[in-house]
Length: 117
Image (cartoon, rainbow, N blue to C red):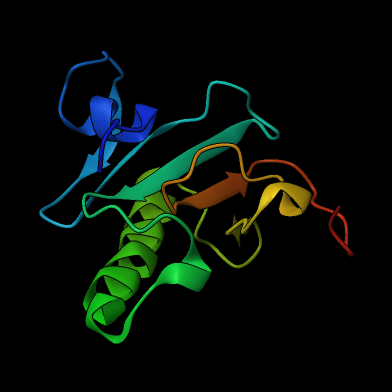
């Protein structure tokens, strides 16, 4: 890959960002343009441009993202059923993707309507 994404630079500590969570598979940090009082991005260390580009060998990484999301939700106190949180993965410009490095949005601490969008 020729240029690092902003997410890679954050993970590599080239751009400062306080991490909410980190493990061997991913890192999580607050979104700079939050859409809810809690809006955390969970980003895999391995660059997968978007979820539709994931390959069978990415299965462990994809699973690690969801497990990390659950850990972040517990850490932030929003995993109780009466509170709740939403996970979102955008694929492509029409879905709101702005960084070509797949990531999971964790949104919480306000009522989230349905359908989204």
